[in-house]
Amino acid sequence: MTRGVHDRGGVPTDAPIDRTEHELAGWEVLTDALANALEDAGVVNVDEFRRGIESMPPDEYERAAYYERWLFSIETNLVEKGILRAGEVDARLGT
Amino acid sequence: MSHDHDHDHEPVGNEPEAAMRPRALEELLVEKGVLDRERIRARIDWLVSRTPANGARLVARAWVDPDFKHRLAEDARAAADELGLDVGPSPVTLGLENTESVHHLVVCTLCSCYPKALLGPPPEWYKSLPYRSRTVSDPRGVLREFGVELDDGVEVRVVDSTAEIRYLVIPRRPPGTEGLTEDELAALVTRDSMIGVAVPRAPERELAQSSTSGGG
Image (tube, one colour):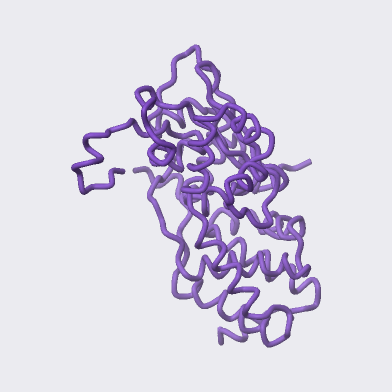
């Protein structure tokens, strides 16, 4: 079985740990709140949410900021459930 | 710094674009009747109201009450409830007591599981790829990077959090704190000491009385 990109324990790296403290930005707090509100509402459960993050293409996963992975998972799950159409968020953003 | 490891440095995100996306998502979900704004607001309020002060209160009580420490190790949610702290819908959380011979270090190799109810949102480094990799393969090296040198005789136990179980380290009570009140003790308990990458602050009673700086 291939190791998933999310499975980081012991992955060889000599990269230093960047210990810069970072207050959550508004969009990060909102993303966190949306994921939890969807769980509270019984729309996306925690296992579906994690699977969504873990299904991200590996190179994208490694490039993405933490809450960008969350957004990816929320959107992936909502599209799978037919709540959002593919590309609907992009369309709303006008991109 | 080498640029060979750029993929290990997680950007905070392309702020303007990333900032718009969750707002568009929120709008769509509200319009479709999937979520109402109250529910979202409640989760925002919950997240921003969580701080390490909650965990610090539990640790300080554990330092002065061995029975409480035992209960904290068994079930941190129930222990928090005893002190009137609302942990909300949190997963099972266990306290891990550091001793003379054992030091605990918490990581989440798969993602970022963390006792948010007791410590607030996890720091950026806790969620970073290098921390998630190296805490398992080289825990003493990671501790050294955070400024913690342990004697060779001390066993380091790395604990991997999961979606189902979270951990709160109960650090060792610093020497010279016998006369302190529980609140004074709680002020020594840092977030990082409850993750296991630091030891609590040393008591500085004279400084605390005269200094205007809050320290690190």
